[in-house]
Amino acid sequence: MSSETMPLLDRSLLARSVQTNLARMEYADWKPATDAVRVGIIGYGYWGPNIVRNFHSLEKCEVVAVCDKSADALRRAHRAYPGIELTTDFSHVLNSPDIDAVAVITPVWTHFELAKAALLNGKHVFVEKPLTSSSSQAEELIELAERKNLQIMVDHTFLFSGAVRKIREIVNAGTLGPLYYFDSTRVNLGLFQHDVSVIWDLAPHDLSIMDHIIEAKPEAVVATGGNHLNGHADMAFVTVYFPGNVVAHINVNWLSPVKVRTTLIGGRDKMLVWNDLEADEKIKIYDKGVHITTGEGVYNLLVSYRSGDVWAPKVEQAEALKVELGYFIDCIMNGRKPSNDGSAGLRVVKLLEAADQSLKERGKLVSL
Ligand SMILES: NC(=O)c1ccc[n+]([C@@H]2O[C@H](COP(=O)([O-])OP(=O)(O)OC[C@H]3O[C@@H](n4cnc5c(N)ncnc54)[C@H](O)[C@@H]3O)[C@@H](O)[C@H]2O)c1
Image (tube, rainbow, N blue to C red; front, side, top):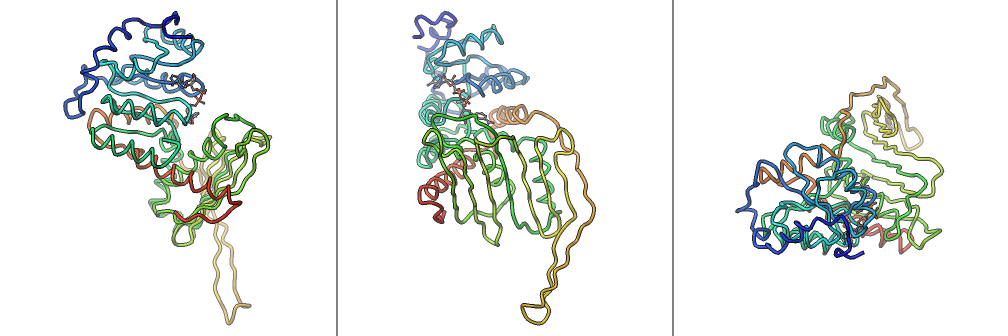
């Protein structure tokens, strides 16, 4: 359906879209019109409604417009937020002088084009994971945002969950001792994506969490897996090697009969289990470990196992997406670069590309 026949289209947005001069302001000149950042959201499919709901709930944010190609999607948006302007044409959002920041909540292959156009029009951007379909695209967005003094934030939602924030605190405090491994399982039945493999759909969550928790730079990637239904990998095992013998392993699968969201982090001194499906006690820390002393010769290894207390630290319950979007607004208002910026997005895209290459070559080690 064209924007001409779209019954819900707010014509005022269309009329204002001709005034593009203000939209092209540099960040240095940018001042919020009020004390709120005005946001336009492109994409109101499965994930978009969560973004709109959370932006809408923030005091220092005003949701000005929602754009989606689909009339049905806009009808849903209208029912939930009758006052918000609606359009089927993303250029109305990108050109509107009443919008300071654009959220790109569309399929992966559209992220680059939409985010680039938003940056060129002087808008800050919030882009879904994974940031882009290639590292060269991510590099171009980063360079553009730097040049125009605008913020890019990539939606690495889990970094803002109480569980991941607690895990990072525990790891950084040295509670686990030097890390041995990070082992994450994210499996369930579906949701099959048409345009990307399970690696590009689900693994960005685990890779961004891994990137947030393990400070060292990864050295190499190995990926194996299979595609059984639509030509894209629907199950995959991705191994990431770090210096110092730290190994990360990620199991993502759309063909699992049960949903599992469990991460194990093993250290020399303690071991941690995060089960995100637990309502309470999502994180447990085990005072367990293995100690090896070498006697005379290799046949005299003395292995002792330690099995001590288990405890469950308190985990904040706030909705991760709300915390993240509040941080995005705060970064814009204070001219601060977010920690989940374009570079964080690029690191994840590089790992996804390496995993793709390894998968194609049936598990070949790909150096980073
Ligand atoms: N952070 C998370 O936990 C999380 C969860 C789910 C999805 N996602 C990400 O969100 C993005 C969208 O995923 P989804 O599951 O909502 O997809 P979806 O297909 O359900 O929704 C995408 C919507 O974008 C619209 N659209 C596409 N191109 C457009 C264009 N050029 N202009 C206007 N509208 C356009 C479509 O009509 C559709 O309604 C993906 O990048 C995905 O990886 C993130």
